[in-house]
Length: 80
Length: 330
Image (cartoon, rainbow over all chains, first blue to last red; front, side, top):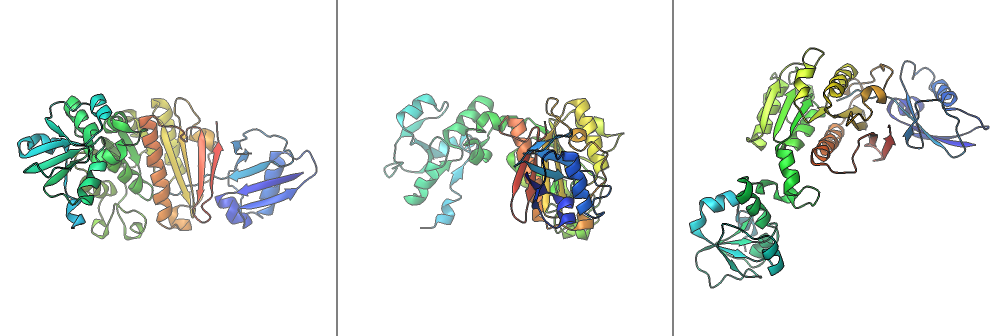
């Protein structure tokens, strides 16, 4: 299945892109995807809290992803 | 024709009332509008195209909202002729409530605002926590829109490095308390706005008292900790919180704690690590200006009751590619 990933602020800076598409076998969950993103970030997201939104809706609990889902990783921002 | 001079040929309802004997008032509205919205307390001549050549002396033209008559004066190059600012709508409001709202006539013409919405803004109190990159544009736009009372909270002092992104503060304000500098700038826009200043940082001790009597609190701070305080007091007092935050070219806005809608602790529950401040990561002044203005816009929508709004939603704006994502958070 194909999952589109949207990256915001620190996630974007860590991965060098605001969007990427990844292909998986079925059964990938949001937590597993977060783990993958953190690994790709190679330490740059350590200690950074991430909120996950699936198809433009916050997903506080772990859910299983489907083909075509869009997953956003949103860190808090501090500046003001 | 000197169109520049015509720009000044406007008169407010209050001015007209004070100088009524100097003018002949000409109502250019169609009959249906004149019947539906009669102008009490005013003797008028009816003339649908505003032609007034046979009338001597100074004239005031009146249409429904004050726009058409400005055009008439310019197009026909009318001398000694004024347009009533805000038109019959403003006159009627002035007569019934003794309030001259013509200053906001360009926004009261919007059906979503109208006279009722404008009065809600004038009766509202908004707390702006932080008078930096977000707080300057937010408080400026709230004052220009006609918010009746602002409470400005910030313990910081104006520094040179602030000036590129905090437009209420200028070169001569360096060293001043930010709330004082902001108050002076905002007073120049409208001295009738009631401004209360608190030259301390908002914290556990003072936050409840500051927020409790407000209608909306605008989070224009630059620390997660202060946002958590605001969130706590916002929940305790049921005063909705308009959250704003920035990181380089990106900004976030959400309306939190509106009738028990999700708050900051639901938005970012993990006592998160801070992320960059504007000083750490850098920022171009337009970004906080845009985000601060979106916060002010949402505050106005809450007060007037305009939907859609960002209650239960997180807006993420990217100033590089101008993408806007709106995430439902509850």
